[in-house]
Length: 349
Image (cartoon, rainbow, N blue to C red; front, side):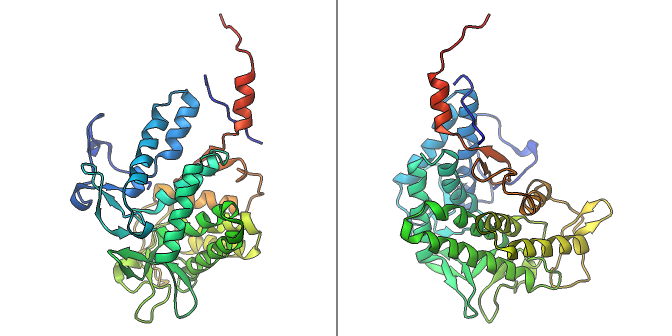
């Protein structure tokens, strides 16, 4: 068991020159009305709590708990969290809800905050299961062909699209299944498996066996990209991330089989002389490379694939939580903290 005791006690990247000076208020120019983005201000909790654990300084935890306080206070349409929030008024700017880009890691961090706290953060647990209930009621859909997917919600109107980024949700629902209400635990695990199956279908239905940036469920399409602008693959990790979690949770061999399909497809279509490249169209085997190896390919895609084929005790889910960029953070055992607090302090010269 990994034991961390206190010492003394979406993920996107941008050029440093474009960042604000310390202490200034700032938001993305393209965000709706200068809004703050749910997946950004909602994806700080694990790291800031860990900083407090390491430093003994409560300021980091206080900052993210204030974000949570604001989110708990404001009204949520149908229990859902829209993607844009005004940093001035503290209200939602528009009612666009997505489990993919702009929203994704906020939901992931709720259940992971609960797990990283050694299952003591009851507020995070309540927020997560309430959000999941709203997601199931409003976003989870089943296609005519029987595929379960998470649609996007735009002011009450469903957009029957699922982005590659949303495919992390199979793993998220899976790791949260065992701590839900007893009567729903198997249901949550089944839902996780269905979502992961749908994301595998988005890979399996392409010529390259790699998935598009987004796929749709309308006009006869099922788990396929219908727009030219959605047909690319940039080495994203979310699908194999869910394979890894579902393998660890169920040991169903299909998840390793699916993961190996992805490995072979990456080798065949994405490997280039100096590394790996994204491809412009997953539906043709005459691939055009985008000549870019994204940073998350090393930190996430390959790491999750490695863990998928490793023993469960390598970065065990009982001891570690992965942040949204797949960096492992230790679960803080409260028993360890109690033992450390009980030990007499020794003077040092």
